[in-house]
Length: 405
Image 1 (tube, one colour):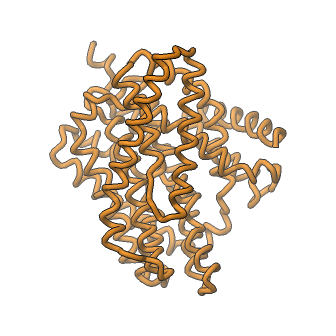
Image 2 (cartoon, rainbow, N blue to C red; image 1 turned 135 degrees about the vertical axis):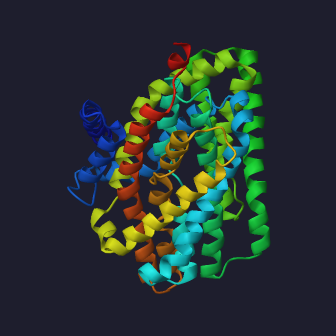
């Protein structure tokens, strides 16, 4: 596995440099490296490296979520809280609902199968969106109106809601739905629980750091280690059908440390930014390695048309959520495209319905279609969304330097 990691580091850095020289997001180059060297094209990655890919992706995702938490300033959140809350569920529900409605027409699925597909696709990708928003915050772009912070907060909640709704429809489909109203009511309970657990752990870590005063590097290692354990708790609770949003808990840890000890938070965030150089290569190359381009092409224009219809509904949901916001038209357009990219959740969840159907001896064709469209959504929206975010963000988001001049 060590050789596989070394190869990905070198190739990922090279791809990142080449794409940045072309004024394109470096993550696109890393995704491309993963696709080309992954098992579905050249198949040059070590089997051991691929076997550990889920854990490596989770660790990389944890690092970027922690960085996001350390950027969630309370004052800014107070300004954009209403819009962030609306963005967390309106666009995703409209996108998932549109795909559920149109899936039978485009792909011949049932409405229930289309609903499962819709809420797999409805989750925006934190792997793509979060690092790009943090980049804008670090360059002081859009900070005055809190636009990157608003999208950071909303995109994380968006994922939780989409995944929980998907699990409800999967339960219906496989006959294990249980008490549906309890599951629906469990969405806000799950979100609140995740945030409160993160706050509690963050407070305990602060007390620990104040008592023993470890160096910033050791503080960072402790925070990362605890966050990894939270994801393990999420997996354990999933067996008992108890939804626990570890990603929100991880972000809440960063938020509470920033709120109580700003200098300490900046030290830890600085250390995480260095680790992110390695973690980003692992995350994007391994997400790329999960993409089977031939599978994506199976659904052809029908699958692409359905994805576009979903994106149009999502875009309308973003505009609806921002109706009473102080953002101008160009900033609202930026918010629309910032909500396009799909990658992480689709790579992780796309095969879940197929696996469930196979385990129950059901017809697997609908699961294959769902997986193909999920993969196609990554191929289509990840590069398009990342490029649109970069180009529009540089032109639309005002910088503090511009204000001072």
